Image 1 (cartoon, rainbow, N blue to C red):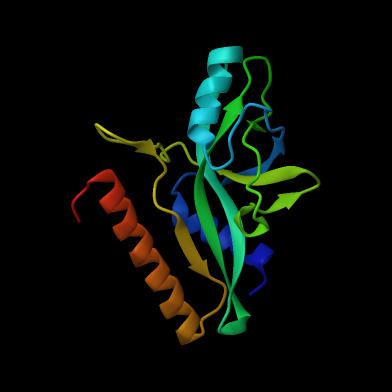
Image 2: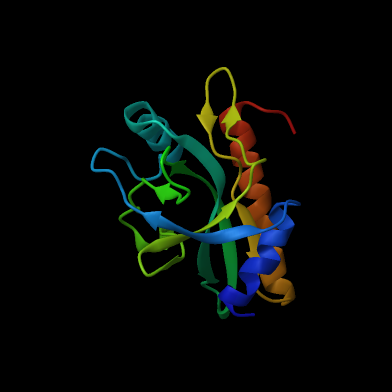
Length: 165
């Protein structure tokens, strides 16, 4: 399955809301830090007003042992909704490593708005929900690989946030 064909199918597994999947302007702030979207959006709101909007960005990966097999990741993300516009803006710079950069088109980031995708907040942490994974095919090895990634991600998040299974 082609990554673009798989995105809508994947998005339907993430949210029960009507799909609000589209492009948001990528306009990183000079003071913002990559991989810190929640903090960056909080700071942007402090400086300029507006609101945080939560959802998911998408990344595409290949399985090294199966170069023909790919999968998608949905990474929990926050973008800025300016007070004077309906256009959402991603103020977070991209990571230096291209494998951590979201799917983009013409300088804008593909974003799935998900009102239920609020950050995890504990006494000691404020951060993202676990990354989600979606195989782009039915090859048994690929499905098993993606399921293993999902389990590892959920275990890691529980450990970081101090949550029980």
